Image (cartoon, rainbow, N blue to C red; front, side, top):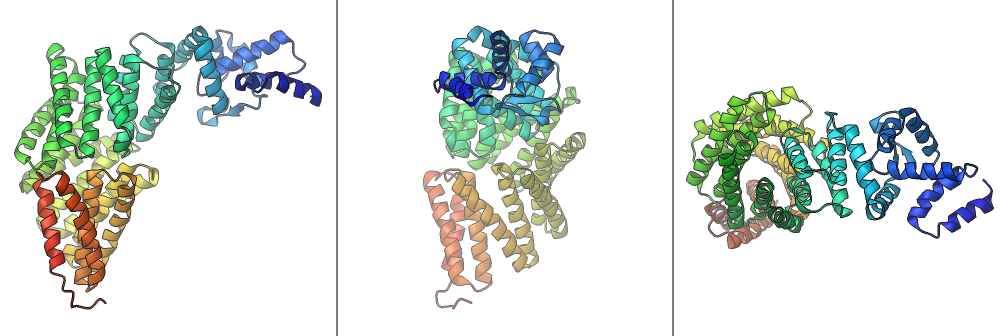
Amino acid sequence: MDLHLALRILQSAGGDPIQLCFAAVDLAFPNRSEQDKLRLKNALEAASIPHWFDGCILAKILDIPIEEGISIVEDLKCLSLIESFRARGEMAVNVHEKSRLLLREHLFLYKKKHFGMWSAKAAECFASKPLAQARIEWIYHQLCSGAVSVEEDLEKLDQDFVDTAHPEDRLALAAALQELENAKMLSGAAQAMSLISIGFVRNSRGESSQILTLASQALGLARTASRKSIVGLALCLNGDISQNLGKFDEAITAYEECLSTYQELVNDSPMERMWTHRLSTAYEKISAVLKKKGDFDSAFIYANNGLTLSKKLAAEFPDDIRFQVHLASIYLHLGGILQSQSKLNLAKQAFTEALIIGEKCVRLDPLNADWQHCVGVSYSKLGSIFKSQSELDKAHDAAEKSLTISLNLVKLDPTNVAWQEGLASSHHQVAGIFSAKGDLEQAYRSYKEDLSISQILLEFDPENIDYQQGYASTSARVGSLLIKRKRLKEAREYLNKSIELLEKLVSQFSNIPNWRDQLKMVRQIRTRISIKRSDR
């Protein structure tokens, strides 16, 4: 192309980002007719609707023959802002992300009719495809098109993803929804459900303290829209965040309203299995907070209510994997309560049930990381029971299986703090078994592995009470081992850090006996250190 012509084309854009996108057509095809270039610019706008496209998708969006769509895509490939997208097929391409978002925003603001119509056409391209990536693209375009009851579609998809999808698919859904949230393209119940979906994903990745405003906004929007089931989910999200931040009374209040909401929905529609499923989850959530508060009897009652509902669903719908997964989860939780009550044989039965169900689920989908995590936790819990019953070889075998799963999960996604927390816990358990066997060197190494991860978690979210308690517990263990190895100065440093964190927890939550007892024990250990003995 003539350099002077190219400069005139760019100058005529006047620095406007949208006009610069269209200028790419003029630069690539200077000899085409104005009508043909206008047709390509229109196609470029349509191509910005989906995250990726090919000739068939573009033809569907523009309502033109497939052959014409393929021909237009070949022309668009000549533009600098069109990229290959081989992850979706050999012929797939996409508009460069920055340009795509600019063009979409322009359409949304100034050509809303085209934006909605093209989004509806794009949704049709993915409506019948079962793969997670296609389902994400479908709901993305449904939301953009303003489809009737789209919030219900998103609610169903989100809950299906929560129970059965791979973590990376849930993350991809959250990213697509966050794109719409950033562009301010959603409102009302649809925005509420979108924020809830994003919130649950971020909370599962350890971002509780960073999404307080998001969760509050979601609840407000859900209440305004008077969508009872979405209100229930928003309450559950707010309860989860409050629980993670140690605001137990706030968590209980949110969960109790959530439970009441789903009880009303069950009463209104007793045949709707999803309301029963969420009611069971609400019982489990309340039980979890009561367990943390040390009220094991009440925690057991709520957990047992949830278990009864969960077992009923799993029996009535044995092919619905969602109910099997939740049944394993609630068995794990119930086993933890029984273990806290020193009912070790009953706890072992519950953990074994969870392991059997979890392994069954993994056989159905070996790549599902969440289900692998469930199996890993089950082994970990069984290992702790074996250790308490002095079956150290069985305990070590179970703990090593849990550790292997945790290592694989972290390797799969190092950014997932839930997996990191699980890995720290696995190292902690292995260390405890080595210590019980008298292998203090191996115990020390495993506790240090735990401590290095716990330090990262605590720095990531200093307000997370589980991270605080985990770091305090491991610091105390390391301090105790260092005393046995006559390294008293180092031992005191670790014990002091443990005491510092436990004092903070006890000052905030004085009614939790477990933390008070732990603080008392660590102080006693520190007191026994003789300052007259030399360090080695």
